[in-house]
Length: 374
Image (cartoon, rainbow, N blue to C red; front, side, top):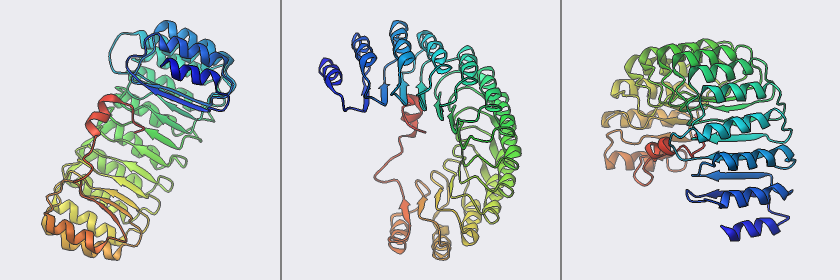
């Protein structure tokens, strides 16, 4: 650690510095003191370590004079001690004054509703931040409602990640309502917030009118078939969304069939994730039929469902007719090795097929650690 700090202290050309360690100890204080004098770095990150209250003071002091750092990432390990929340309040205070930061990520810092309110108050003053990531905290409905109110006025933020923050239906509705007024946000990640059917319907309603959002992640939100049907109806009207993640929502039969119908109408969506949605052969056939008609989708994830062997011939025929799809995830769908090889041989130079043998998903570990980009 000391060697890295010495190199950083002596370097006038290093522009990016990221460190991953759970045992930094006094090294954090030394590192922040060196940063205080550094004028070359524009990207800085500490991963797998939650800085303490005193180190938070040093970081605030550094950021108050910062004129070069445009990207800051602080990703701690998950545990509750309320120290992280104190650091969060210090960083929120800086945000209102900072004119340099464009990308801020604070994950696993136990930030609750009070910290959400603090960040919201300062975001009203900030005019430079374009990407804000507060994934894996505990903002809850109240903290998110404060941020949603800011979205009604903010004109610079284009990307917001609030995944795994205990939003629930109320938090989801607050954000959806804000999207009626916001005209700049293009990417919103709400994975793992249990927004339920009510939350899904709120987003379905706003997607019929919002013309700014191009990427929406609603994975792991337990909104079921009715939520899936509502979002399918919205896709028939929306003309701007290009990426939609609906994985792990138990959408099941009617919801998936409605989405298949929507794919026959929608002309803008290029990426759709339906991984882990508990549908089978019949719904798979509906999606296969939709691929014959859809002319915009380039990536489709159908992993961890039950498409079964009997649909291989139909899938092969549909993919021969489709002219746009370049990536198809079919992991864990009861295909045998012969059927997988048949598909692979038929589309080797046309479509990237993933059957999951060499790259088992790290989804579960990722959800726990919260270091990924999600």
